[in-house]
Length: 152
Image 1 (cartoon, one colour):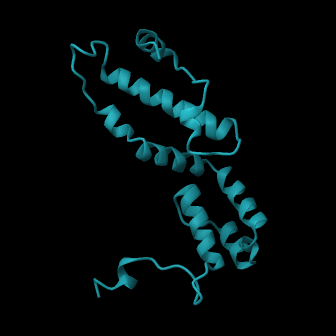
Image 2: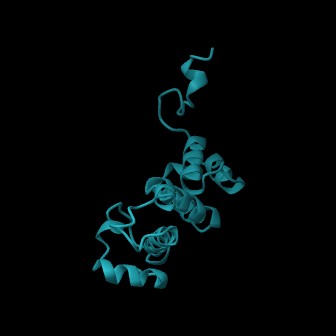
Image 3: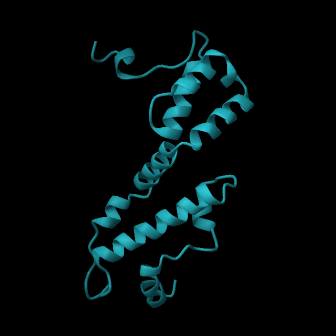
């Protein structure tokens, strides 16, 4: 039993392998809010509203307006960019005399603010290259002195 794929993996889809309405609701909710679908999303699934692109977009926009979406995306970026490694890093003192854990925290905070601005303030279409190709960084004041010495 413990080796059965039915036990180890969550299998989605109807008999023909296509996603059913409740699977779509579940995927949307876990992707955007990192939690199970709420009552309104389950009702939309029951009515078949998630079968169309317009219905999925409407549901997604509603989910994104919830504060849980912001927290879910923040958690995603924390894991993707490995902020834990930055916050716990050490550098050779001779080579990086200005580096400190406070500076590491400032680096992470500036990156979080940039991502927050790109995703929630500009509200334009998203691509993974935007944080890398964005030409106007949001400079967090405590980090300005470090940037000027590095000439970044």
